[in-house]
Length: 127
Image 1 (cartoon, rainbow, N blue to C red):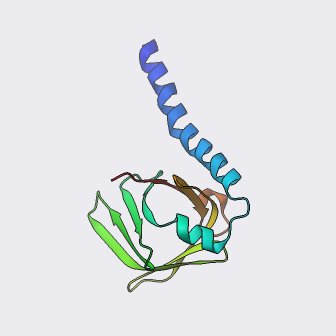
Image 2 (cartoon, rainbow, N blue to C red; image 1 turned 180 degrees about the horizontal axis):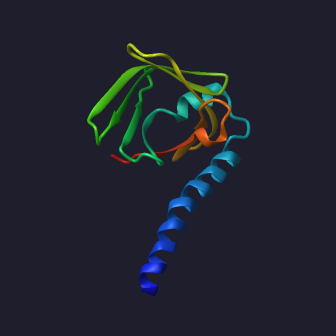
Image 3 (cartoon, rainbow, N blue to C red; image 1 turned 180 degrees about the vertical axis):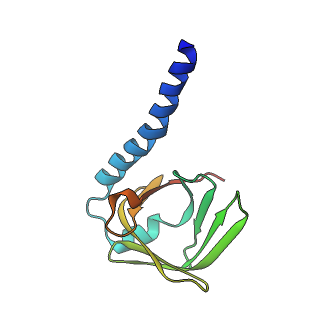
C-alpha cells in the first residue's frame, strides 16, 4: 500500500514539477526577447505538455501544421510573430494568438488571452 501511495506522489510531483521548472526557465529566458528572436527560435516541431498528442510544426517559410496524433486531425496555415505573440491563421478558421512569455531552444510558453489558466507550454519534439 505504501508503494502505491509513493507512486502517486511521484506521479503528481513529475506532472506538476516539469511544467513549473520549464515555466521558470522560460521566464528567465524571456529577457530581451524580440520578434526576430522569437521567429528564429520557434521554428521546429513542438509537443504540448498539457495535451501530449498535439504536435506543432513551425516552418521557417511562415507555414505551420498542428496535428493531434490521437484524433488524427490536422490544421495548417500561416504564422507570424507580432508584438511577441505567435499568431496562427489556420486555413478556413479564425486567427489564433498566443502571447509568448518565454522561449528557448528546448521549450516555449505562452498565454491565450488574459486568463492565466490559459497558459500553454510546448517542449521541443525530437523526431
